[in-house]
Each structure stands twice: as C-alpha cells, then as structure tokens.
Length: 172
Length: 140
Image (cartoon, rainbow over all chains, first blue to last red):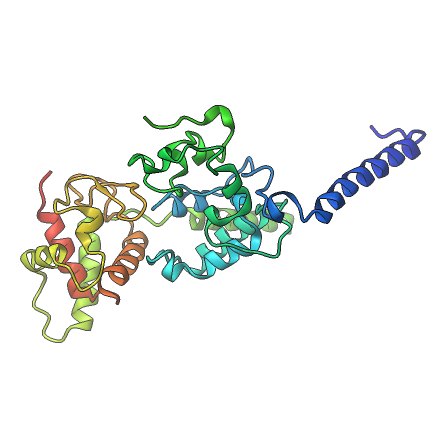
C-alpha cells in the first residue's frame, strides 16, 4: 500500500537511484562501454522462453540465448535464414516474425557499439572471455569441442542460457 | 442479450482453442498420399513412386557439398549427425523414429531446406514421393 505522506521521499529516492544508474551507464558510454561496446546482455535469457524459438533454433544447434547479440544482429540473422551460415534454415513468415520478436525484445541490453555481428564468436565480449588467458588453446583442438559455436561442449547449461563459471566443465 | 454474448464468446474461445492446437498428426502413409496427389497434378503421365529410385536419389551426391547422407548417413534407420554443427539427428525412417513424417508442415519445411542445400532447388513431388517410398521400406 502506498503511503501518500511518504510519497515525496519515495519519489526522491527513486529519482536519485535513476540518477546513479544513469551516470553509471553514462560512464560506460564515455568509455565506449565494456568490451569495446560489444557486451552481452543481462539476463541472457528471459525466464519465460518462447517455445517456437526453442523448437526451431534447436533443430540444428542449441537455441542461442537472445542476450548474446544485439537486436540488429538478430534482425540480420533472421532476415537471411534462406542462407544461414551456408544452409537453408528458412521458416514460414509467421514463425519468422514470432521468433524475431522474441530475439529482438530480449537482445543484449548492454551493447553500445554500432556493430551487429552475425557470429556470436565475433563479438567483443566473446573474444575477451575466450582468449588464451581464459581458455587454453588446446581446448579448441579437442574434437569434442569441434567449434567455438558448440557452447554446450564446455558450458553444460548453455541450452538454458546459463553460462556461469560454476557450470563450465572442459571435456577431457 | 448478455446470454447471447456469453454464448458467442464461448464459441469463440472454443474455436481459438482449436486453432491453437498443433497441426493434426498424420501417418507417413497419409503424408505419402498427399505427395501423390501433388505428383499426379504436376507430372503428366505420372507412373507412381519408386522406392528403388528413391534410394538411388537418397544415396547420390547432386553436385553440392552436402548430400542427404551427409547428415542422415547411408542408413536411414541410424542416428545421424548435422554435418556443420555435429548435433544429433534422429533416424529418418519412420520405423526407427515414430514422429518422422507425421506432421505435414514439418515435412514440407525440411524438404524445402534440405533440397535447397543438396540440389540447389526445391524437390519435385516425384522426388519427394520416391524418397518417402524408399524410407518406408526400411526396417529398423
């Protein structure tokens, strides 16, 4: 129940909090944002995932979490499904719209750069988080890993949009 | 008046409920019958489908990097593997995976995609029917 006598205080706190949040964002903006402005979103995946996105994308690979790329990347990818990394992954117009909406609405909310890569592995945050300091080069040569697009080879909960450190297990 | 409104909203709910259901499941034979209907219309002097021709088509390469067997293997009753991503592909033969060729929309979607990848064009109804006729002869 809102207490109207306290309302000015609540308002003041809210405005102050917004100010702090905005100046933090501004500071990031001034530096071009984390990872050269190419930062993944938080959360990576909404609690309620879209069933059609799950079904269709996971037909050939894991359904990559929408927060891994900015909205424009998803628009580009969904616009080019007729030739999706070399294969035809086309959908009906209705399916395409539903999935595009889900991806765009839940895309990275921390991406500041005017870039829109098609490959998750080309984004600033990915390259930094998987450089030789983080991932020993031998890991990439393991046939169980096969490709850096194969998230779940090491991120055991990748299909749920969970890439936390504690759920990483390098395959032997 | 109000009752009429309730009745019509109830009817509307029932209808939208039905529309929200996934496409009604069919058997592979029903899917084959509808491809036959397509083929009869598209092919003058249509002679029926041939499992032998379907097998040859399935196992051939058609001038592109990918062929049917790149992902489905030479044995349609075996589990396959996506040629690019390595993701497991369930067996294609209905005798080995019950849900294969039971959803006409899904059948159309994958024929379109895979024929484009393998042949660089969509398949004819004759080709699709031949392949399905072949797959239906595969025992687990």
